[in-house]
Image 1 (tube, rainbow, N blue to C red):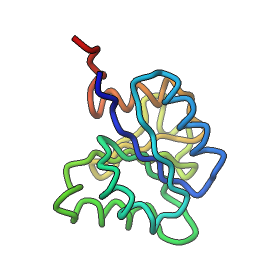
Image 2: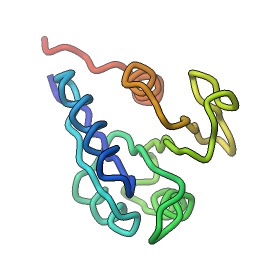
Image 3: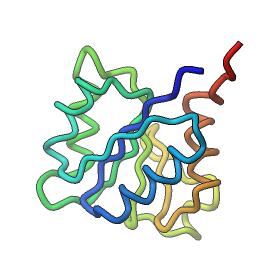
Image 4: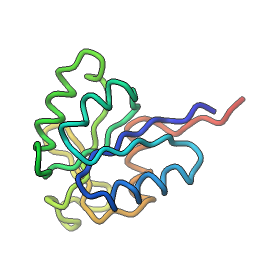
Length: 130
């Protein structure tokens, strides 16, 4: 089975590590962590993710600006982006997240089951090897 590639962009090292470990433990995801917004675009170009999990509020560059750069990049423009942020509260977003401007926003803290459901909704379930 070919693993789905997930790029996690968040300035909180503990968060990106936790997401990477939990997703990789499933055996169906290959995850790369980036802890600076400005490193997201060059990393995405080389890693070629199937999906990007992106924080909104980061010290070096806003997640919205990162997403705009991704959407303007000819190589990356079709890669889905899910925002994972503390800016949106659980009661506002609900367990399935909130869509705003065509983008899905998930509220932190987020459980791994909710996160995997959002990922699968965006890119489909990984298919087992034949």
